[in-house]
Length: 351
Image (cartoon, rainbow, N blue to C red; front, side, top):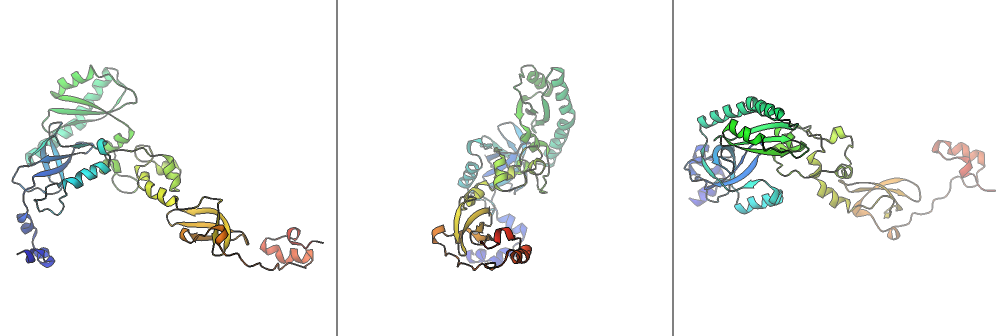
């Protein structure tokens, strides 16, 4: 039995139904939920065997809501995409640590039914249109100048999150009770920045992919112009700014690699040696690890791999080249050197 199961040909011959039948129901599931894609790991005691991407109804710290299954963290499910809890916590730690929106206080209730999805779709449409306009009108009537970006409910209706954009601190002592009476739910006012607004409302970026902040980034780290300069990217703000108007998050992705590679390269104007003689560094290419060196003896620029550079005093000295203009008259020097950019004034023999 074991040998047969271990045989790749046998595994490939198994139908999807047979593979599914052999899986066990998971005991813990990782899901994402909410407009800003919070992550939660919750226990599950149902008999159904959901797969990645399945819609689940879960009791989270906010209430009862629709979630999307990402993976499982139990070793006994038999799912090839299952990860260990250690791997999950390591990912959270590497992706933001304590700032990462990871929750464990909750439970998976069931696989979402058609009725659940229809109810959620109707509720979401109402809050994206009618209720959003109502909240904006209520805030305006109370004199608030903040921008209401989104009003987000949960499936159970017991919690409503109002995402707003404001550069100043806002006193909600009048607004929150009014909204709570309207929705019959607990209201949370969530202040966001320009990058969070893009996470809620944007779709695709210049690269053709979903915005990173909307797709997978949970902790938005600061991005500086230094990253663009180090990577020698365009410094045109229109080309390196994202949907939020700030520098694109992806400029940070290769920062560490660029910094490590840059440390291996000599600085501009430093003296180095090559197989063709000593020279001065005039430029370098970080990714390909090439150094552009201007040779002392002939002024020629050559590209040298960084691992082939030598100390200036350890490189071979070029042989002295005879001067082809030595002993010639000034007029002959000017005539023969004109095409090469050399002049009679600087190449004529001295009297």
